Image 1: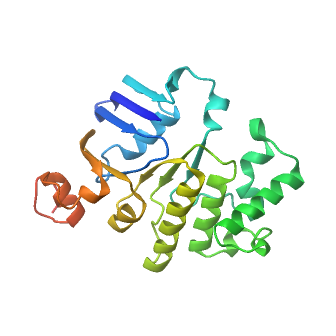
Image 2 (image 1 turned 90 degrees about the vertical axis):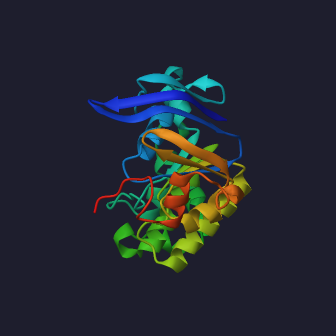
Length: 248
């Protein structure tokens, strides 16, 4: 479904991606791990075509992402942003239905509202939440609204950017379970960026570790603990000592 081959991206003298090779199968849940500044967010922006790679190729369903009509291409994607990233001035239902109220995916307002309420229910929120403002919701509820927005247009591919950041362990477990259920239910292809190893084990089919702009290790989530790569071992166990340099 998604293929990256020798993708390079630099910003000035900062080489962020240094030859990334990665395949994500249709319907697969891929989780990308790695320390801050390793290129995880840039990787997603390149796949979406928001940032152009300096070299290499990225294809989605066999199509080069740099050569497709943008509106039709982006309509295939959904995204749960870190911190939910809701529009403060819009009621919850309009946040969820944002893409359904404008542009290529536009629906009649009453239909868009009905879809929004259905998606809110799918993530465990009652219909009475629909007319509240985001500021009236807890962090966990806001994250669920963000998830409802990500799936509102029934996308083929969903990106999750640090989906449990800022949540307590119980709510993080709820969000992880919802993501796993929804991705499986929709048959969507998913790429998740996270530092949370609990999320990795709950969400992933396969895991890729980025380090210094390259995929250091990639394999099934069930193989992660037995992997012998010293960089992966240090990261998943959170050790200060190891080949990954840390500031002291």
